[in-house]
Image (cartoon, rainbow, N blue to C red; front, side, top):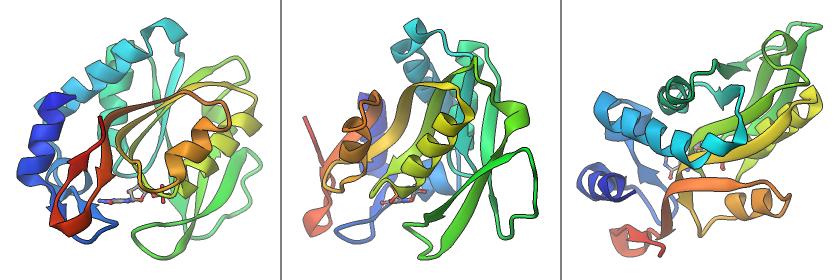
Length: 190
Ligand code: 5GP
């Protein structure tokens, strides 16, 4: 997505060889026009999949997942991050390490909001090692719903996450793929 590449070059900050700060676009501030464009792009790519529900994890995935759900005309459900898991008989949960925070968090999704007959599109902001995404994939699969695909705004190709998801046979669509952040510069993959 060319407009997103341009905005990343203008507003992204390379924090290290591993981390691209996207606070201006995804993680602290949201541009509603750009976000709706991203949602439209995901909706077009997954239009034929008869999606019944969009799923994301709080918090940075919510805006673009909302835009996607709006375009597809389906509900958005966001998995919540809980410090303690009070026994909730309806909850599906997974413990995942957080790439940026260096801590472990529990993500949970109530069975109230995902059903066996759902065709789910999972949307997230960035994939690095893929812990968060693998956790969500497990939750969606355990719910009995069909995971129709995974849309991610930024795929960092030099980290293993997206590859491990593709190896499970899951379709991933990335709006932008980054090959390297070496020498303080963003190199996009072709
Ligand atoms: P993973 O579980 O794939 O290792 O990391 C995914 C999550 O960590 C993303 O949802 C994102 O919030 C955060 N993250 C991973 N890499 C980056 C990065 O380079 N920049 C920012 N801003 N967040 C990242």
